Image 1 (cartoon, helix red, strand yellow):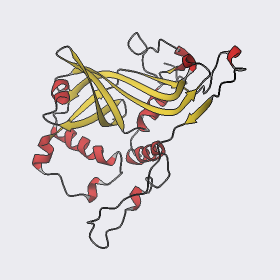
Image 2 (image 1 turned 90 degrees about the horizontal axis):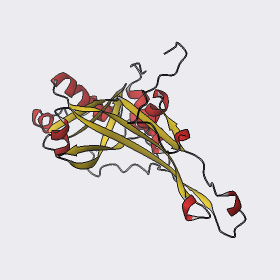
Image 3 (image 1 turned 60 degrees about the vertical axis):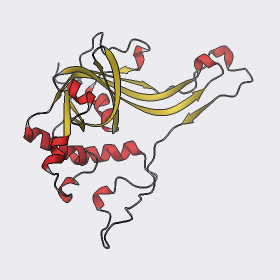
Image 4 (image 1 turned 135 degrees about the vertical axis):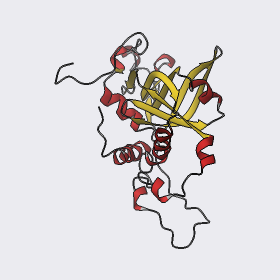
Length: 243
């Protein structure tokens, strides 16, 4: 890799985008940006020959992905010894109505990340991960909370996976009909899709005088969720270098 080259994940038969390879991206910047703008991922793995795909909250630190769950979770028990896994996220940007069924589509940005998942067993690493499980979404919030009990920590398992390979696939084409179809008397359109935040709903049992902290300002009415998540991620890891 030269001084001016862009850091990227290695490309092989596992992560190469095979169909519409022009939509594939492997550089760290694109992959990480899409991961950091998401909170919910799906983790695929195999247990005794049976495939499973589990939705979970996750977060990224450098080239490592973390997620958590109950200590008795089948997914976490299976991955704890070090098992191959694939974590995916998708941002749906539009639905595309074309002049033929074949050309109906969607605009999207997605990531598939591959690696070997393992249980976080070091207590210090686990406690830090449990802190970032909250602070990645809501920077500095853990310091204001009731400390977790020993039983709560024991009941929660954390999985980490180094990203060994990854690919992003992005479609931004909108309506793309066959040239001869554009004159057909068929209506076509692109339907933009946005996930935006609603108005905060404070707990009805808040003690008098407890106000919404300024640190939650990224999460405000009408703001795109991915913008809030990205801002929170940057704030949470402001003092840590990224590759």
